Every structure is written in C-alpha cells, then in structure tokens.
Length: 305
Image (cartoon, rainbow, N blue to C red; front, side):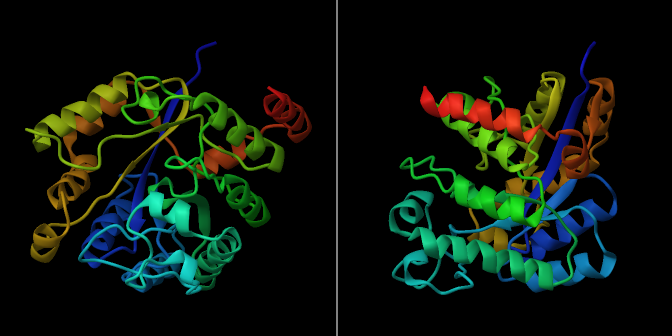
C-alpha cells in the first residue's frame, strides 16, 4: 500500500517584527500555510499574540528562542539569567555561544517562562519547535533535547523533531554522524509520548549567489515532486516588504519571496500535481502516536550500541 505524502508548511519567527507579523497573519488568514510558531521574547510578540488569541487561531505553536542573531534587531531572555546573554545583555547571536555559555537549569527555566507567556496570552498552542536549532547540540554536541522533550510532554504537545534523515536535504543530509543522535532523539520523543513528523526539510535561509525569486520558486517546486512518503515539515520566514528591514536585516528580500511563494499559482499547481497533501500538527498529534513501551525498549537498544 502506497503511503501518502503530507507536508507541513510552518512560518517561523511569528512575533519577531511587525513586517513578519503582517505576512504571517495574511498567510494564516488565507489558509496558505499549515501553521506558525511564535517567539515569546521578540519585540512584536504582543501584536502577534493578541491577533492569535482574538481569532482563537488553532495552528500557532511556540518557537522556543535562545538566540538573537541580528545586529539591528536584538532581544533578551524573559528570565534574565546572566548565562543566557552576551556582554550586550541580549541573547547570544550564535548557537555555538549559547551552547557554550548557558547553564542547563537557566535554560529549563527560560523554556518554562516562554511557554507560560504564550499560554497566558490566550493562544491555543498547537506544537513546539526551536529557533535556530539551539537546543539540538548541532554546534558543540551539547544537546538539550531531553529537557525540551520533558517539558513538551508535560504540556501535551507535539514537537518539531524528526524521525528520519532525508538524504537529499541540503543541511541535514550533509551532517556527518547524525543518524545516531536522530535515533536517540526520536526514541526519547516516542518514549515520552511526544508526537513528531517523519522528516524535516530545510532550504537556505540566505540568498544564494545569483538566486532570484523565480529560481528560488523552482527549487521549492522541485522538492515537492521529490517529497518522501510520510509527514514532512518545512519552514519559511515570510515578511512584508519594509524599507527599514530591507536596509538592516540580511537577506530580507528572501523573506519577501517567502511571503509571496504560497500565493503563487505555480506553487499551488505543483502541490496538486505532485499529489502532496498539506497537513498540520493536529494530524501529527492524532495520527503519529507511537506505543511508549516498545519505544522505550528501542531507545534502550540505541543507548547500548
């Protein structure tokens, strides 16, 4: 029996700035994307949260945020612990700095604080993911996935981790020795009862040399025809055209492209023609449950390798 090919399109960085909010709200209103994840620490959080709560938007998750990467747009943690900040008093610019400098107990408290802020805003939280992969240990090997998953299972939410490596993915497919960490993370998610998609698909955040909107669109369309069976998530960072952002935020033009792409007739046709079913985290939570006891035995076998 042939499995379906389902795709979650998530808008990351909801609440980062008004131009991003405008783009993401428009995409959600028109049903052109599956979901968005909100940044509790970012400057435009209150606008995004008020809109989501007022609409009882059912597909807004939490984007756990431990880094603040842009020179001209910075933010700080909610808890204010010194190990979560650089010398400027803002969250670290890079994941490596965060992994090296943060204290685990402080990170756990910050994760909880961000969740509580989103929940108290009135948002019906749909799922959990992580800004810049800062909790995954990709830079130094210091993974905080167990702590994040423990919180996620207490909240009763699915998570953006992934079960398999898609070998053609430009980021994850290029990382060496990633199979074992992925197996351990997915095994722990199953053991704790946290539902996760099968695959995570990436595309470059920055504008590539010579890249145009049309070439960017074509690269995404090609991926639709190669989508693996199962449930995949990909993410975009859409933003409306804004003079200040164009001048101060690197590759802002690509944010504008990503706000345009879901409305593009060629993109909509390709989804239908490739037989891709757009889905969301409600499907993940309801349909991708894994029995916890067998998962615990599988995790134990992985740990003993």
